Image (cartoon, rainbow, N blue to C red; front, side, top):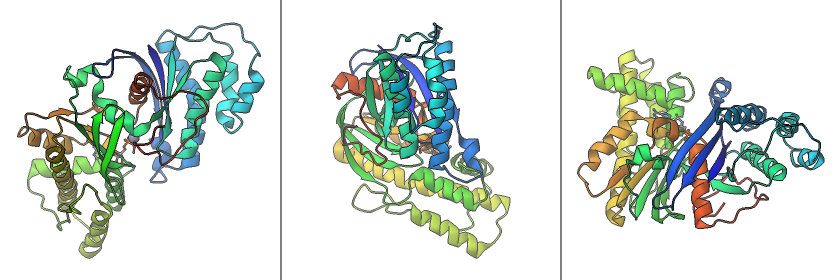
Length: 388
Ligand code: KG4
Ligand code: ZN
């Protein structure tokens, strides 16, 4: 079947058309097309994502991105424009002025594309931003009758490595463990079978990506800071000359649970910088390395303890921070001591927010039988254990 994926939970407006076949234990996915607009440059000057600004940008970008996607996948077929359903659609989009402006004139002048279902993120995320995607899906449903499948964004991150080129046809074996590390979340999730998720632990304060971004800000690096810190740390490791100006704690490293806490790390950097004053370039690199080491030590310790305790056969790492090559490499190296565990990591373009992972999760929900309708709502704090 062909699935249109829609992702608008944060600062990426992303669409894709995914062809999916097979059962959930041996799915076959083929990406027919993707179209994505990152708002990072718009939010950069504020040092973070502004929900209402994100909402407006999603509303403006969805139709141009959809047009490009249909054109790229050769599904764009013009037809004589008509007025039927105009009133219903305009009412549906009453809270989405930017989307409403162009939706009907575009949609009413094209033929229904060959799409069998629409998968859309309903949470977690920024509610005003989530609503744009949901209302877009509802309006497409109203126009063409295509069923809509609600998707939990975090389930998308879990499934993101499942394209064949990543799994190299290694099947996921259960129990599986997922470490989700992104700008908004840090979670260890036990998966007994697809669709059954148990959160073993999560962050009590800042998410890993958020810690990267906040420390980057203290070092006057641009938003999002993760890639910049990572680059500095890498320079430090290759030169081997930079020593950290001060040591950082490994918060909750030995705590008797699977929770995380990263805000203390940020505070330690803040106080360290206050005491030290201006850092040299080498010291900055050394600090970036020490910060990355501290984060990695904690992630490794907790994840490997969970792997042992629950006898997991597959380890999935998902979320934007997986783009960090040091964290990736350290997990790969450590897992060589556990040949019984298969490691699955998404390619970089599927690690950060995207619509392909949402379409994959939509397919799994369809297969597992999550109810699909078009009256669901945005849920900013949607948990993995709750069905969307
Ligand atoms: O999953 P994602 O794209 O969005 C959320 O759902 O949050 O993750 C974005 C986060 C940002 O905090 C960003 O700084 C971080 O991922 N990130 C990185 C790297 N690339 C992106 N963190 C560390 N190292 C990187 N190379
Ligand atoms: Zn995400």
